[in-house]
Length: 438
Image (cartoon, rainbow, N blue to C red; front, top):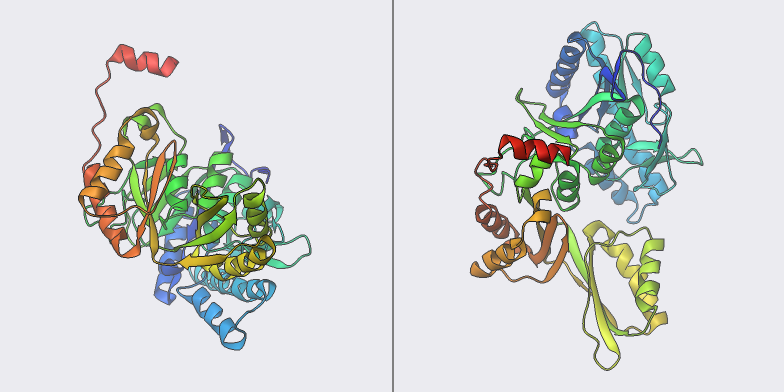
C-alpha cells in the first residue's frame, strides 16, 4: 500500500498537520447514548481546528450476533457470504454516527470501505489491505465534511466485500492515516491506554506513557487486545503515530511511536497472555528431509497462521511435531492435517485446547542478560510448568496450562516490578551527547 497525497495544510516530516484519523470500537458505540458521546468527541476535535476522518466498528456485540445468526441457518457458511453479512455491522455504525453529527449541525458523510478506496486481496475473513485511494475522502474534506468510514472491510480484485479479521478496524484507521499522511491516528477504546499487563488480571498494572512499535507489535500478536497486530505493522512501516485513548474518560493515553535510545533502558515493558491458542501435535512423523515442509505447505495453503513450533528428538527415524495456532483455525487445521496424515503415513493428530501463551516483552531485553533465567525461575518457584518456549530479541513466550495463565502474568509482573514507574539510569551530559551522536 502506498500512501497518497494530503488534503490541505502544512507538512512536517511528511505528515499533514491538522488532519487526525480517529477510530472508535464497538463498546464505544454500544447504544444511542454512546453514539452521541462519540459524535460530541469528534465535534470537539473538529472545533479545535482539525480535519477529521473517523473509522468505526460495528455497534456493541453486533458482529457476534451476526455470526451466531449465520450458524443458526448454516453450520458451515462460506467465507464469502460471511464477509457479506459481517460487513453490514460497520455500515450501520457509519450511517447512525453521521446522523448524530447532522443533528449537531455538522456536515458529515458516511462511506463503506469500498467507497473509501480500500482494496484488499481475496482472502475472505482474513483479507489484507493492498492499497488505498483516498481521493473521495480528500474531496469530502475539502468540502468541509467530517468523513465517517466503515472499518474492517474493503473490496477484493473481483469486487467482492472482504473483511480484515477481528480488530480489523484498527488496521483500516492506520491505513487511512498513512494514505492521508495524517498528523496522528487516535484509537479510542474502553481502556485509557496500553498497560504493563491486563489490569483485569493484574490489579496494579501501570498505564504506559509510550511504547515502541516493536514492543506494541509483539504484545498485540501475543494476546494484548488493545490493538490489532497488523495495524501496528502498518504504523511502523509508514511512520504513523498511534495514540491509544479512552472514549469514556478524558485522560492522557499511550503513544505508540518509533523507538528512541532511552527506551532500551527499560528491560521489560509489558506482560501479555493469549488464551485463544490451541496446540496440535502430529505424531509418528518420518524424520526425513521435506516432511515438515509438506505438512506446513498444506496449512499455508489453507491460510492458517502458525505460531510456536517444536520438533521432538528423533527416535528410530520417527519424531513428533507440535505447533500452536489460534483456536478459530482449529477445525480447518485438523481437517487439513488428517488429510495430509493419510498421504504422509503419519500415525495421529492430537489437539490440546488447555493451553495459554504468556509473554514478556521489552526492547531493553536486547542489551540485558539474565531475563530468560528470571522468567523461568519465577515460574518454577510458583509451580508453573512450561510446556513450550519461544524467544526473539525482545520477547520470551512460554506455553502453560490455561488455568495457570493469570497466575503466571501476576508472577512475572511482580518479578520485573512493572507496577513501579521506571527509573532511568542517570546519564552524564557528555555521555548523553555521545549517545545521540552514535
